[in-house]
Image 1: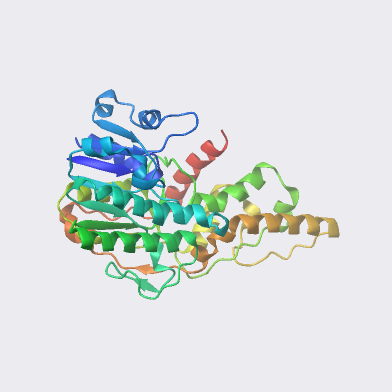
Image 2: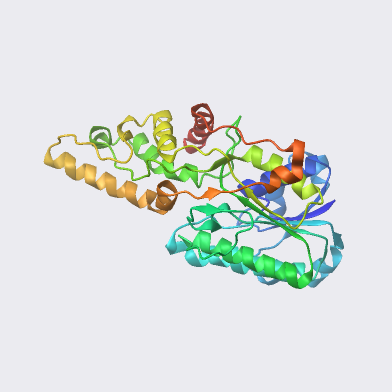
Length: 363
C-alpha cells in the first residue's frame, strides 16, 4: 500500500511510520522542517535502515499552511494513494497556547482535508482522542458531540477536528476510520518514548524540584489534589501500534475505535506509586496536606514551592479528578483473534516508564 502520513515525527506518528515500513508499505510523509534540520533529515533520523528509507518519500510541508504548503506540481505527482493517516496534532492544554492548538488541530486539519480533496485517495484514518468526551461519565464509540463540555483547548479543538473530518467524509464519499487513543505512555518493556507530555508532564516539575534538593519540599510535603476513586486511562505505545497498524493495513473502514485500557488503575495509586519510584517520599498522602510543624520562614518557603507545583500541575487537574468510562468494542470485533488487551498498569510497568524518563530528563 501507498500510505500518506502526517505527524511522522511525533510520538505516535514516528512509531506508526516505522511499523508500516517494516510491514512493507510505501510511505509518504508530509513533514515540517526545523530551523537547523530539513524535513528529510528529520525523517532520516527516525528511519535508520537505508532499505526502509528508500520506500519513504518526504514532502516538506506544514499542515498549518493552505494545502499544507505543497505546490500544484507536487500534488499532481502523487498519483493514487491507498490510505491516509492524519496523526499530526498539538497536545497543548493551556489557554495561553489556545491559538496554536486550534490552528493545528482544527485549521490544520481543514488545510489537510482541502489537500486530500485534490488527491486520489481510497481511505482516511484520523487520529482523534478519547478525551473529546469532555469528562462525561460514559462515552461510547458511537458518541460524538452529545452535549459534553470540553475542558481545555486540546479537547475542544480535537472534537471540532473530528466533526470536520466526518462532514468531509460524507461530502466526498471517502471511507474513514476514527482512532481515539487515551493517554499514550512509552513502550511497555523498554519505556522508550519520543515525547514527555501527558503522564510525564505531571511528574516532571516535582522531579525537577527533587533534583534541586529543595529542603522544605521534604519537610512539609506538597499538596496534590486528586480523586480517591477516579481512574486514569494509560495505554503503552507498543500496544497502541499493535492495535492500529492492522486496522490501517486492513479494509475495516468507517468505524470509530476508542483505543483505551479496559481496566484503568486508580489515579491516586498511579500518583503515589510514581512518586515513590521517583524517590519523592515527601509527596505521599496524595489528596491531603501534611500537618508538619515548621517555623515561619520554612512555611513561607514551602508555600512558594506549593505555588510552583500548582502552576505546573493545574493543566492536568481535569484528568486527576474525574475520568470517563470509555466503552470500546470495535477493535476487538475487527481484529478478532489478533486483538490483545493492553498490559496491566503495574508498579513494574510504571518503573520502566519513569526509569527511561529520568535518564532522558538528566541529559
